[in-house]
Image 1 (cartoon, one colour):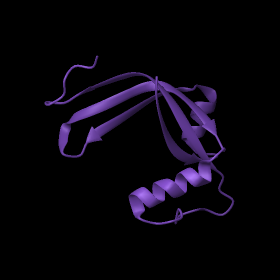
Image 2 (cartoon, one colour):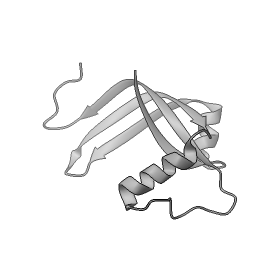
Image 3 (cartoon, rainbow, N blue to C red):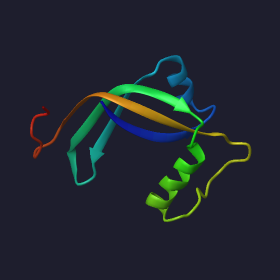
Length: 98
């Protein structure tokens, strides 16, 4: 099983839906080839542990900022850890998944 994660905040629809049903599908499109995409199927686990550090790490990677620059007053960050059970997708240069 492969693992992946993303960040959200408490009260948002994503965290509410995952609290009700942990099944998750994540689709990622190739920005250089709009026809190519990957789809990850699995289960998400929502936790507060490490969520603030996680969002700061994402801000560093994608925004070049040391701290997440858009926190809302009273916001509680959450990290969703995804256990990937199956991968699918399509792309003109892709080989079949094994």
